[in-house]
Image (cartoon, rainbow, N blue to C red):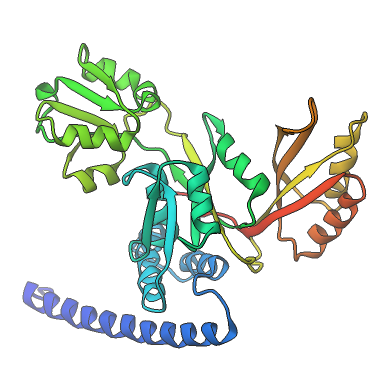
Length: 360
Protein backbone atom coordinates (compact mmCIF):
# COMPACT_ATOMS: atom_id res chain seq x y z
CA UNK A 1 0.00 0.00 0.00
CA UNK A 2 1.47 3.36 -1.02
CA UNK A 3 1.21 6.62 0.88
CA UNK A 4 0.04 9.98 -0.46
CA UNK A 5 1.84 11.32 -3.51
CA UNK A 6 4.17 14.33 -3.46
CA UNK A 7 1.56 16.35 -5.34
CA UNK A 8 -1.11 15.46 -2.77
CA UNK A 9 1.16 16.41 0.15
CA UNK A 10 1.96 19.75 -1.52
CA UNK A 11 -1.75 20.43 -2.00
CA UNK A 12 -2.28 19.78 1.71
CA UNK A 13 0.61 22.12 2.55
CA UNK A 14 -0.98 24.80 0.40
CA UNK A 15 -4.27 24.44 2.28
CA UNK A 16 -2.44 24.71 5.61
CA UNK A 17 -0.54 27.80 4.40
CA UNK A 18 -3.80 29.42 3.33
CA UNK A 19 -5.30 28.70 6.74
CA UNK A 20 -2.21 30.15 8.48
CA UNK A 21 -2.46 33.37 6.46
CA UNK A 22 -6.13 33.67 7.33
CA UNK A 23 -5.44 33.14 11.04
CA UNK A 24 -2.54 35.63 11.01
CA UNK A 25 -4.78 38.29 9.52
CA UNK A 26 -7.50 37.43 12.03
CA UNK A 27 -4.91 37.94 14.78
CA UNK A 28 -3.83 41.24 13.21
CA UNK A 29 -7.42 42.52 13.19
CA UNK A 30 -7.76 41.63 16.87
CA UNK A 31 -4.46 43.42 17.56
CA UNK A 32 -5.79 46.54 15.81
CA UNK A 33 -8.87 46.46 18.03
CA UNK A 34 -6.68 46.06 21.12
CA UNK A 35 -4.52 48.98 19.93
CA UNK A 36 -7.57 51.24 19.58
CA UNK A 37 -8.76 50.26 23.06
CA UNK A 38 -5.30 50.91 24.54
CA UNK A 39 -5.15 54.35 22.93
CA UNK A 40 -8.55 55.23 24.40
CA UNK A 41 -7.23 54.18 27.83
CA UNK A 42 -3.90 55.98 27.37
CA UNK A 43 -1.97 52.69 27.57
CA UNK A 44 1.22 51.77 25.72
CA UNK A 45 0.97 49.39 22.77
CA UNK A 46 4.08 47.43 23.74
CA UNK A 47 3.42 45.44 26.91
CA UNK A 48 6.49 43.39 27.90
CA UNK A 49 4.58 41.45 30.55
CA UNK A 50 1.81 40.36 28.17
CA UNK A 51 4.26 39.42 25.42
CA UNK A 52 6.30 37.39 27.92
CA UNK A 53 3.12 35.51 28.89
CA UNK A 54 2.35 34.78 25.22
CA UNK A 55 5.85 33.42 24.54
CA UNK A 56 5.98 31.31 27.72
CA UNK A 57 2.60 29.72 26.93
CA UNK A 58 3.90 28.30 23.65
CA UNK A 59 5.55 25.39 25.42
CA UNK A 60 2.29 24.48 27.14
CA UNK A 61 0.43 23.64 23.94
CA UNK A 62 3.29 22.64 21.65
CA UNK A 63 3.26 18.91 20.92
CA UNK A 64 5.96 18.96 18.22
CA UNK A 65 7.66 18.25 16.00
CA UNK A 66 8.65 21.96 15.99
CA UNK A 67 10.95 22.83 18.93
CA UNK A 68 9.67 25.49 21.33
CA UNK A 69 12.58 27.83 20.51
CA UNK A 70 11.55 27.85 16.84
CA UNK A 71 7.99 28.75 17.83
CA UNK A 72 9.29 31.52 20.11
CA UNK A 73 11.21 33.07 17.20
CA UNK A 74 8.21 32.80 14.87
CA UNK A 75 5.81 34.30 17.41
CA UNK A 76 8.25 37.06 18.31
CA UNK A 77 7.95 38.28 14.71
CA UNK A 78 4.17 37.82 14.70
CA UNK A 79 3.96 39.98 17.84
CA UNK A 80 6.29 42.53 16.25
CA UNK A 81 4.16 42.77 13.08
CA UNK A 82 0.92 43.08 15.07
CA UNK A 83 2.50 45.79 17.22
CA UNK A 84 3.75 47.72 14.18
CA UNK A 85 0.31 47.97 12.59
CA UNK A 86 -1.01 49.48 15.83
CA UNK A 87 1.66 52.21 16.07
CA UNK A 88 5.30 52.95 15.33
CA UNK A 89 7.60 51.52 18.00
CA UNK A 90 11.11 53.02 18.04
CA UNK A 91 13.95 51.49 20.04
CA UNK A 92 17.38 52.98 20.80
CA UNK A 93 20.37 50.66 21.24
CA UNK A 94 24.16 50.76 21.46
CA UNK A 95 25.34 50.68 17.85
CA UNK A 96 26.57 50.22 15.29
CA UNK A 97 24.08 47.96 13.47
CA UNK A 98 25.12 44.33 13.78
CA UNK A 99 26.28 44.68 17.39
CA UNK A 100 25.11 42.28 20.08
CA UNK A 101 23.04 45.17 21.44
CA UNK A 102 21.32 45.31 18.04
CA UNK A 103 20.62 41.59 18.29
CA UNK A 104 19.22 42.05 21.81
CA UNK A 105 16.90 44.79 20.52
CA UNK A 106 15.71 42.48 17.74
CA UNK A 107 15.11 39.69 20.26
CA UNK A 108 13.11 42.06 22.43
CA UNK A 109 11.07 43.82 19.75
CA UNK A 110 11.27 41.83 16.49
CA UNK A 111 12.17 43.12 13.04
CA UNK A 112 9.05 45.24 12.54
CA UNK A 113 10.17 47.82 15.11
CA UNK A 114 12.23 50.87 14.13
CA UNK A 115 15.76 50.95 15.55
CA UNK A 116 17.97 53.88 16.46
CA UNK A 117 21.68 52.98 16.81
CA UNK A 118 23.67 55.37 19.01
CA UNK A 119 27.34 55.65 19.92
CA UNK A 120 27.22 55.51 23.73
CA UNK A 121 25.03 54.08 26.48
CA UNK A 122 24.21 57.55 27.91
CA UNK A 123 22.95 58.57 24.44
CA UNK A 124 20.82 55.41 24.23
CA UNK A 125 19.14 56.21 27.56
CA UNK A 126 18.73 59.92 26.79
CA UNK A 127 17.02 59.13 23.48
CA UNK A 128 14.23 57.31 25.35
CA UNK A 129 14.07 59.98 28.05
CA UNK A 130 13.63 62.74 25.44
CA UNK A 131 11.12 60.90 23.27
CA UNK A 132 13.41 60.20 20.29
CA UNK A 133 12.61 56.55 21.03
CA UNK A 134 9.96 54.96 23.25
CA UNK A 135 12.32 52.27 24.48
CA UNK A 136 16.03 51.81 25.21
CA UNK A 137 17.97 48.54 25.22
CA UNK A 138 21.20 48.61 27.27
CA UNK A 139 23.67 45.93 28.42
CA UNK A 140 23.76 45.51 32.20
CA UNK A 141 26.10 42.55 32.78
CA UNK A 142 28.17 39.92 31.01
CA UNK A 143 28.76 36.49 32.51
CA UNK A 144 32.51 36.72 31.81
CA UNK A 145 33.28 40.45 32.11
CA UNK A 146 30.88 41.53 34.88
CA UNK A 147 28.68 44.62 35.09
CA UNK A 148 28.57 47.45 32.56
CA UNK A 149 29.48 50.61 34.49
CA UNK A 150 27.97 53.04 31.97
CA UNK A 151 24.57 51.38 32.41
CA UNK A 152 24.84 51.47 36.20
CA UNK A 153 25.68 55.18 35.91
CA UNK A 154 22.57 55.69 33.80
CA UNK A 155 20.28 53.78 36.17
CA UNK A 156 21.27 56.03 39.08
CA UNK A 157 19.84 59.13 37.43
CA UNK A 158 17.32 58.05 34.77
CA UNK A 159 13.59 58.70 35.03
CA UNK A 160 12.91 55.53 33.00
CA UNK A 161 11.89 52.21 34.55
CA UNK A 162 13.23 48.74 33.86
CA UNK A 163 10.41 47.09 31.89
CA UNK A 164 12.04 43.89 30.64
CA UNK A 165 15.25 41.96 30.10
CA UNK A 166 16.80 40.03 27.22
CA UNK A 167 19.42 37.29 27.62
CA UNK A 168 21.76 37.01 24.64
CA UNK A 169 24.41 34.28 24.23
CA UNK A 170 27.61 35.82 22.86
CA UNK A 171 28.32 33.63 19.84
CA UNK A 172 31.23 34.80 17.70
CA UNK A 173 31.46 33.74 14.05
CA UNK A 174 34.21 34.01 11.45
CA UNK A 175 32.77 36.04 8.58
CA UNK A 176 34.31 36.69 5.17
CA UNK A 177 33.74 37.25 1.46
CA UNK A 178 36.30 34.48 0.93
CA UNK A 179 35.05 30.95 0.40
CA UNK A 180 37.69 29.15 2.49
CA UNK A 181 40.05 29.73 5.42
CA UNK A 182 43.23 29.44 3.34
CA UNK A 183 42.31 32.60 1.42
CA UNK A 184 42.20 34.72 4.58
CA UNK A 185 45.24 36.91 5.33
CA UNK A 186 43.88 39.15 8.10
CA UNK A 187 41.12 39.16 10.71
CA UNK A 188 39.32 42.28 11.96
CA UNK A 189 37.50 42.61 15.28
CA UNK A 190 37.19 44.43 18.58
CA UNK A 191 40.09 43.52 20.94
CA UNK A 192 37.68 41.66 23.24
CA UNK A 193 36.33 39.62 20.32
CA UNK A 194 39.84 38.67 19.23
CA UNK A 195 40.79 37.76 22.81
CA UNK A 196 37.71 35.58 23.30
CA UNK A 197 38.48 33.67 20.09
CA UNK A 198 42.28 33.53 20.36
CA UNK A 199 42.49 29.74 20.81
CA UNK A 200 40.42 29.05 17.67
CA UNK A 201 42.33 31.67 15.66
CA UNK A 202 45.71 30.21 16.71
CA UNK A 203 44.62 26.71 15.70
CA UNK A 204 42.80 27.47 12.43
CA UNK A 205 44.40 30.72 11.20
CA UNK A 206 47.96 30.68 12.59
CA UNK A 207 50.17 33.59 11.62
CA UNK A 208 47.36 35.74 10.20
CA UNK A 209 47.36 39.46 10.91
CA UNK A 210 44.91 40.41 13.67
CA UNK A 211 43.57 43.94 13.18
CA UNK A 212 41.90 45.66 16.15
CA UNK A 213 38.94 47.94 15.35
CA UNK A 214 36.36 49.85 17.43
CA UNK A 215 33.65 47.15 17.39
CA UNK A 216 32.85 43.70 16.01
CA UNK A 217 30.39 45.41 13.65
CA UNK A 218 33.15 47.68 12.33
CA UNK A 219 35.27 44.57 11.81
CA UNK A 220 32.52 43.07 9.64
CA UNK A 221 32.34 46.29 7.61
CA UNK A 222 36.12 46.19 7.04
CA UNK A 223 36.00 42.52 6.03
CA UNK A 224 33.20 43.27 3.55
CA UNK A 225 35.61 45.53 1.65
CA UNK A 226 38.64 43.23 1.87
CA UNK A 227 38.63 40.09 -0.34
CA UNK A 228 41.44 38.60 1.78
CA UNK A 229 39.97 39.66 5.10
CA UNK A 230 37.65 38.13 7.69
CA UNK A 231 35.93 39.34 10.83
CA UNK A 232 35.10 37.95 14.23
CA UNK A 233 31.52 39.16 14.68
CA UNK A 234 27.90 38.10 15.06
CA UNK A 235 25.79 36.19 12.55
CA UNK A 236 23.65 39.33 12.30
CA UNK A 237 26.71 41.22 11.00
CA UNK A 238 27.07 38.62 8.25
CA UNK A 239 23.48 39.28 7.20
CA UNK A 240 23.92 43.07 7.24
CA UNK A 241 27.24 43.11 5.36
CA UNK A 242 26.72 40.28 2.87
CA UNK A 243 29.38 37.99 4.37
CA UNK A 244 29.58 34.21 4.54
CA UNK A 245 29.73 32.44 7.89
CA UNK A 246 32.85 30.27 7.59
CA UNK A 247 32.78 29.09 11.21
CA UNK A 248 30.34 29.53 14.09
CA UNK A 249 30.77 29.56 17.88
CA UNK A 250 34.53 30.11 17.73
CA UNK A 251 34.70 31.80 21.16
CA UNK A 252 36.58 29.99 23.91
CA UNK A 253 33.61 29.75 26.29
CA UNK A 254 30.18 28.47 25.34
CA UNK A 255 28.71 29.97 28.54
CA UNK A 256 29.37 33.61 27.63
CA UNK A 257 26.09 35.53 27.93
CA UNK A 258 25.10 39.18 28.17
CA UNK A 259 22.01 40.41 29.96
CA UNK A 260 20.28 43.48 28.52
CA UNK A 261 17.63 45.68 30.12
CA UNK A 262 14.65 47.23 28.34
CA UNK A 263 14.02 50.73 29.71
CA UNK A 264 10.83 52.72 29.18
CA UNK A 265 8.02 54.68 30.81
CA UNK A 266 5.45 53.15 33.12
CA UNK A 267 5.48 49.83 34.97
CA UNK A 268 5.11 46.20 33.89
CA UNK A 269 2.27 44.11 35.36
CA UNK A 270 3.01 40.90 37.31
CA UNK A 271 3.34 37.70 35.28
CA UNK A 272 4.10 35.23 38.08
CA UNK A 273 7.70 34.90 36.85
CA UNK A 274 9.26 38.29 37.56
CA UNK A 275 12.28 40.13 38.89
CA UNK A 276 12.51 43.43 40.73
CA UNK A 277 15.62 45.62 40.46
CA UNK A 278 16.35 48.04 43.30
CA UNK A 279 18.93 50.67 44.20
CA UNK A 280 19.67 51.37 47.88
CA UNK A 281 22.18 52.93 50.27
CA UNK A 282 22.91 51.89 53.86
CA UNK A 283 24.11 53.68 56.94
CA UNK A 284 27.89 53.66 57.30
CA UNK A 285 27.85 51.39 60.39
CA UNK A 286 28.78 47.74 61.08
CA UNK A 287 26.13 45.24 59.97
CA UNK A 288 24.18 47.81 57.94
CA UNK A 289 24.08 45.69 54.77
CA UNK A 290 22.98 42.61 56.71
CA UNK A 291 20.15 44.58 58.36
CA UNK A 292 19.10 46.03 54.99
CA UNK A 293 18.81 42.58 53.39
CA UNK A 294 17.22 40.76 56.33
CA UNK A 295 13.61 41.67 55.31
CA UNK A 296 14.18 39.78 52.05
CA UNK A 297 15.22 36.66 53.95
CA UNK A 298 12.27 36.93 56.34
CA UNK A 299 9.87 37.02 53.37
CA UNK A 300 11.61 34.03 51.74
CA UNK A 301 12.76 36.07 48.73
CA UNK A 302 15.72 35.01 46.64
CA UNK A 303 18.43 37.65 46.16
CA UNK A 304 19.45 37.07 42.53
CA UNK A 305 22.24 39.65 42.31
CA UNK A 306 23.86 42.40 44.36
CA UNK A 307 26.63 44.81 43.47
CA UNK A 308 28.21 47.81 45.19
CA UNK A 309 28.69 51.11 43.39
CA UNK A 310 30.75 54.04 44.76
CA UNK A 311 28.84 57.23 45.56
CA UNK A 312 30.27 60.11 43.55
CA UNK A 313 29.73 62.74 46.25
CA UNK A 314 30.78 60.70 49.32
CA UNK A 315 34.21 59.08 49.57
CA UNK A 316 34.18 55.38 50.59
CA UNK A 317 30.40 55.16 50.70
CA UNK A 318 28.44 52.97 48.33
CA UNK A 319 25.13 52.43 46.62
CA UNK A 320 23.96 48.87 46.06
CA UNK A 321 22.18 47.49 43.02
CA UNK A 322 20.19 44.32 43.63
CA UNK A 323 17.81 42.02 41.76
CA UNK A 324 15.27 40.06 43.77
CA UNK A 325 12.82 37.37 42.79
CA UNK A 326 9.22 38.50 42.40
CA UNK A 327 7.23 41.61 41.47
CA UNK A 328 6.86 44.71 43.65
CA UNK A 329 3.08 44.16 43.54
CA UNK A 330 3.50 40.69 45.12
CA UNK A 331 2.73 40.80 48.86
CA UNK A 332 6.07 39.28 50.02
CA UNK A 333 8.09 41.72 47.87
CA UNK A 334 5.95 44.70 48.86
CA UNK A 335 6.26 43.80 52.56
CA UNK A 336 10.03 43.27 52.32
CA UNK A 337 10.57 46.61 50.57
CA UNK A 338 8.47 48.46 53.15
CA UNK A 339 10.55 46.97 55.98
CA UNK A 340 13.78 47.48 54.08
CA UNK A 341 12.91 51.19 53.79
CA UNK A 342 13.28 51.43 57.58
CA UNK A 343 16.82 50.02 57.49
CA UNK A 344 18.37 52.09 54.68
CA UNK A 345 19.05 55.75 53.90
CA UNK A 346 17.84 55.44 50.29
CA UNK A 347 15.68 52.91 48.46
CA UNK A 348 14.52 53.18 44.87
CA UNK A 349 12.69 50.53 42.85
CA UNK A 350 14.15 50.62 39.34
CA UNK A 351 11.40 48.35 38.02
CA UNK A 352 9.64 45.00 38.19
CA UNK A 353 9.59 43.04 34.96
CA UNK A 354 9.22 39.54 33.47
CA UNK A 355 12.30 37.32 33.61
CA UNK A 356 13.99 36.98 30.24
CA UNK A 357 13.59 33.74 28.32
CA UNK A 358 16.64 31.50 28.66
CA UNK A 359 18.12 30.83 25.19
CA UNK A 360 17.79 27.19 24.17
